Image 1 (cartoon, rainbow over the protein chains, first blue to last red):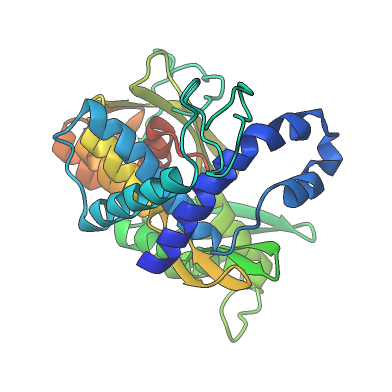
Image 2: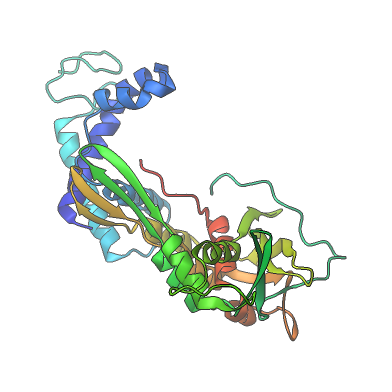
Length: 121
Length: 239
């Protein structure tokens, strides 16, 4: 798996998760036949092939299993991908720090938390 | 684990017909009111491996559109051609490329006619399979063929997930291609690691028993289908 593509996929995946907190509610209220179109409008587009996200899905699962089973044997590609994911997550946390009150990520320049609406600065 | 299908009943004690793994198979086809009896040699593990590798499963991303490409007919034809030993219809015209295309495809489809479901516990898988035509030319359906496994370890589950996720990627989202690996090959390997016993299968010498014999003699497709059912063989989904 191309590391640059995977890095990009990790960035897009984290951003998508962030956007989904708001978009998800709208999507749930949207008619099923219009959902795909609404999804495209509400969420940032993916710019890497589908396969990168499938591999990333596996890596996120492996990372969660490692918390319970630290002795899990990993392929080199999985280790590399976990490191890529962690770096992407750090960058994302830097640009989207957690709210001091509820912990939810917000854009760095936000004055109020989009989740609990408390003042951030 | 994924959602499981309703389990068919296990092999009834009174049902003594064993699926004869090492016997030639015959497939009877009807076309234009004529009966064609295809006799097939045993499908070997190498035949199944070649078939599984030959299945094309890709997703093409082109200018924001997703196109699923799934093509198994070529591999199916190759499989059928490899195992057809003879056909019993004297006047059947033999084409340059072998027997008629639609019949070769039908033979291939008959070879792949297996369905799986979970048994009473989460380490037992039951298969239903069409195998061969009986003396009257009617296809025999074997129901509730039992495969009992050891519980997979987390390393084995991880390896399985890794095999499924190990896609080949080329290009970008504007013109990108994701090629999925053959799940069946990985499933066959894990089957050999986890299998404990089977019921309903036989060899000329008698009932198929013992782990070594099962690994050696079990049909490749049955291995793959049973292991995929055990490990949750549903299609990989996009996040």
